[in-house]
Length: 142
Image 1 (cartoon, rainbow, N blue to C red):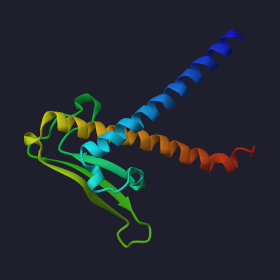
Image 2 (cartoon, helix red, strand yellow):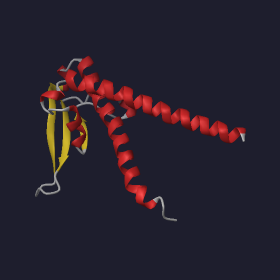
Image 3 (cartoon, rainbow, N blue to C red):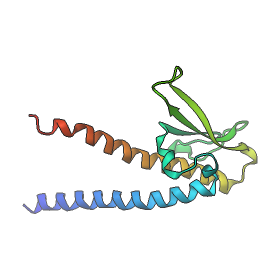
Image 4 (cartoon, rainbow, N blue to C red):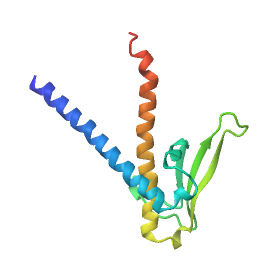
C-alpha cells in the first residue's frame, strides 16, 4: 500500500512540477518574444502558436552543442506556416533576422536560442493536449 501511495505522490509531484515549469516558461517566453522583437512580425503572442514549427538557422539546437554557432551562416528565426487550402501547403516565414552569426552579440544569440527552446517546450504541451482531446471518444470503448 505504501509503495502505491509513494508512486502516486511521485507522479503528482512530477505533474505539478511540469505545470509550474510550463507557467514559468510562458512568462519568460512572452518576455523574450518582445525582447528579441518577434512582436514586430507576429502581432499577438498567441499567434506564435498558429505556426506548425519555429526553427533557427545559424546556431545549433542540439543538446550536445547547444548554441554553438555555424560559421558563415546567418542567425535567423524561421516559422513554418501551413495552409491546407493553398496550392503550396507550407511555407517558411522569417520572424527575425539578426545578420551573420559571427557578428551577433553572444547574449542576443543565447536569448534567441532560449526563445526557440521555450517555444518548443510550450508547443509540446499544446500537442499533448490536442492528442489527449482527440483520444477522448475512444476512452469509453473497450
